[in-house]
Amino acid sequence: MQNFKDQFYLNFIKDDRWQYLTDGLKTTLLITFFAVILGLVLGFLAAIVRSTAVRGGVKKPHPMKEKGRWLVKMAGYYLFKLVDLICQVYLTVIRGTPTMIQLLIMYYVIFGSVNVDKRIVAVLAFGINSGAYVAEIVRSGIMAIDIGQFEAGRSLGLGYAATMWHIILPQAFKNVLPALGNEIIVLLKETSISGYIALTDLTHGGNVIRSQTYSAFMPLIAVALIYLAIVSLLAAGVSRLERRLRTSER
Image 1 (cartoon, rainbow, N blue to C red):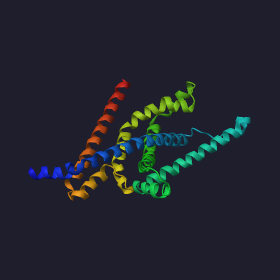
Image 2: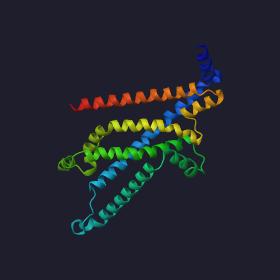
Image 3: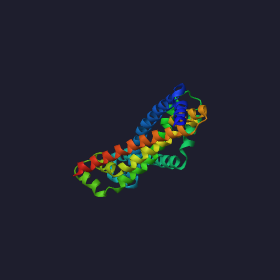
């Protein structure tokens, strides 16, 4: 018991080493929060584009039917095809390369000659990475909605965008909420590699304590317990939101 107290004092109390964990936790939560927002925005946009392309929501205009507006609609059609191609390349590249490599490229290559806050680099790297996985999750939810839902929306006079926003996406969100919650949890844990760009996140804070005290057990266990507590809170929040959404359907 005395040895435990001595180790606790050495690792956390002495020289205020506990501040490495609290400062690192703030950085981790900050990066996760903004990366989640960026990932959701990119993911939903890419999912809408890809699902629209797969279902043929944008058709090539016929010159005889469109008459004077044919050139405008042709330009819009090819613009959509270009955006769809960009989304395909984005999903292939991001899902096919490791997150750590993407983070290092973002820091040493893209922002290598620019003096920018490392937290911004981390948010961009993790947000862009998460967006690719969110896109596939949301796309699967959209594709699971019966095509009759689209037809019903169009019969009510809604355009494609309005049908997607008011009818399809709310249903798709309910279907993919557990998977989205899991992606947020994965993103939180992936931020532990931020130390590769010398960013003091929660994991790096634990490693700093370990390097100073030459004791690995307590700082690493403390980091693991903090991650576990945050993940448990996130999982509980997602479960509660799922129950509320199920209740609203009745």
